[in-house]
Image 1 (cartoon, rainbow, N blue to C red):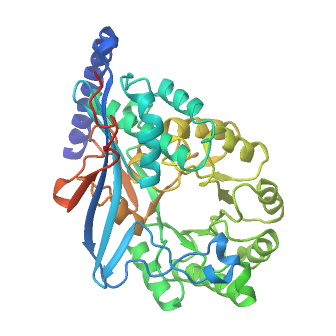
Image 2 (cartoon, rainbow, N blue to C red):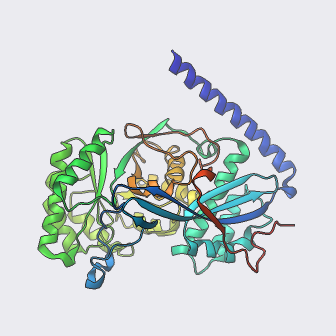
Image 3 (tube, helix red, strand yellow):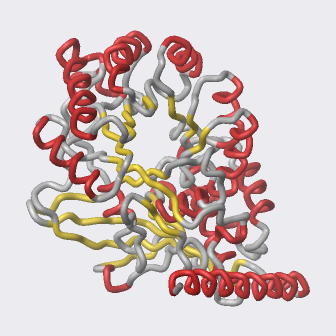
Length: 441
């Protein structure tokens, strides 16, 4: 009986918190003219963690691999390897503060995105109502007329997520409680194995089996080879899938990521050779603007297609949906326009009975979203095993799956409290010669 009473107590606490939040809404609306964004900060944080050998063991296939000089290059993701046992992280976090002293946080993001926030979005935000996120999103979108995609939309996304975190803190409830959730108490996640070596079949089996024993019933692995690696590379890709199916058995889901690095003939050949191993999906086969190519692939293979993590806004996703080009949509909440826009994308997807599983850049934001969706339309959440070590490093309460599930957090906002003990050095960005960090008067 104890777990039942604990669950009832938790539910009662959340209900009370929501009632308090509603009262807070009334009070805030009564003093609407005095509720405003008073400060923005961009904090560049540096920290480190220990590794057993190189943190990033391998890279994935990339579109630029068609050029030989880039085919073997190892990108620097999320920081740098100091030596065989230490990895250094450098990450930027945005903080938006209201005149009442409530702070919303979002990140990590890049210095380029931080510059756009500081130079172009800050004038729109200062002095505005932080609870009016729909108004602010529309104003930012209309102001950045050359920023409908790419890093400008990243900037809008980061601001939107910080505003949602602030709202949750104002009302002292998790964000999912403000947007219709929870629809469930926990969400199944798939282990996304980016950065783990795929060259050694024995090592692949060991890693895949270890993830399975940790409770994951779905895993995603990344192809290392594209068309320019020829028949040998294609055979190696097929062997990876065969190895995974033999290791994991018949029931576990296997997702496969092409990372937009292939072309139509190559994908058709690959899909034909791996179909017997029943992949759960084949992801991002070609570059995102090739919607006609996605449709051609989808019409000719028997493996579900996923993609569009590198697409932006509801209008971009509408093109994919209307073309019937994908079975699973994968918007990235920190890229596509924020939580506000992801909810709109997912709503449109449900009209066509499509699945929406956000790309896993931000586990805290994605979990808030997943907890508001029907399990049939969002059956999984991505958990990038290595990336989460980096992206959640500075968080006080990082989210970690247990037995293949992420549980609904109780913390207000988006679970974005920063841990000062993990910050080795810090720099406030874009303060010189501007009023960016000056309080609004």
